[in-house]
Length: 428
Ligand code: FES
Ligand SMILES: [Fe+2]
Image 1 (cartoon, rainbow, N blue to C red):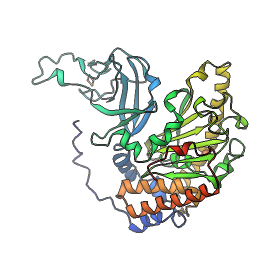
Image 2 (image 1 turned 60 degrees about the horizontal axis):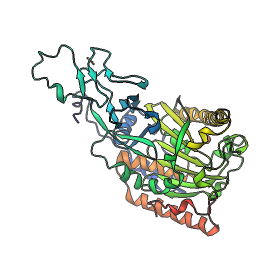
Image 3 (image 1 turned 180 degrees about the horizontal axis):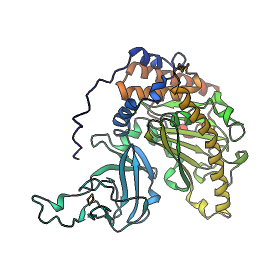
Image 4 (image 1 turned 60 degrees about the vertical axis):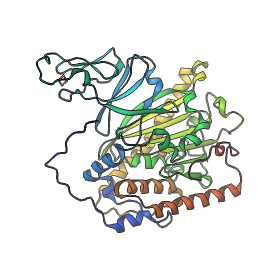
């Protein structure tokens, strides 16, 4: 795929950091420090993250059920790149750069169902498979090859009903990417492909993108700021983490995301008799998807950077297909929808405050604690992507993680009696 020629006016300055800063976070979890404030405030670092993380990794952009018919499309902006997801007349899903090949105007906006995409500027028209269908007044253009003109395509693949895209043509397959962290093996028992989206909403938080996934993997704050909503029963000492090469997943005990922890639809059919109503799990699909499972629902949260201080958060709730026919579905679904909004509002105040804190000249990063094992793994993933991998530090984290898991197993079986462990991740 042709790429834009580099800006000749941008200096090729070195991107270097005092090694002592990196070492402080690369220590093992009980000796390490959180990252300095400028990791969350530097526009230069943000640009580097877009290049080395968001334009290289697989990113979740939605669910297949959002494109049920040929012609269904969404125009998005991911990592600053205009993107168009569309289902063609042959039922194939495509991801394109949403860039007219004339002068780069976005050819589609919003979402809906279309027969074709007409650029609003000079009316070039594109078919649903991205090929050019019309380009007025181009007959006299010398060397203009109409048939080879098309919207540039991006890699797209699906897992569990989630659509992922990757801007890097040289990236590994989605399957290999997920397997590096044991996502497919572990996620299999949840059967996200057997669910449909019952609720989806997005909002913008005034903080750096990294604070969103970090907050979602922060088990330390749940019993504090979510005490009244869902954190009333949250035994933090029995988290069963499985760290992958970069990401992680965990099994733990928690209420479901409904008032008083009481399910309104019951346990998902494929988990009945296998997990209790306090079963909870989470999968971090690096860099931007935190997926949560409860006995009765699945709730993935997807993070999209806008600029260094602004981040879009998209929250899905998914329920088994058959629940959509249940009596009083809409009323019950609204109770879940209101509840997750309330819980995330509790987090948003902290996100804003974190961003203000790291801007302060007086901010010095404090220690990471064992309950922040997942965050520590994630911070090191950023460092590996930005400055090159440190295999020794990673092996220490993985070994520590396995030792901790063995201790937990010696205390007794996990909340699901080991059901989810039947799908072991790559970390072991
Ligand atoms: S920019 Fe699209 S037709 Fe000119
Ligand atoms: Fe939270």
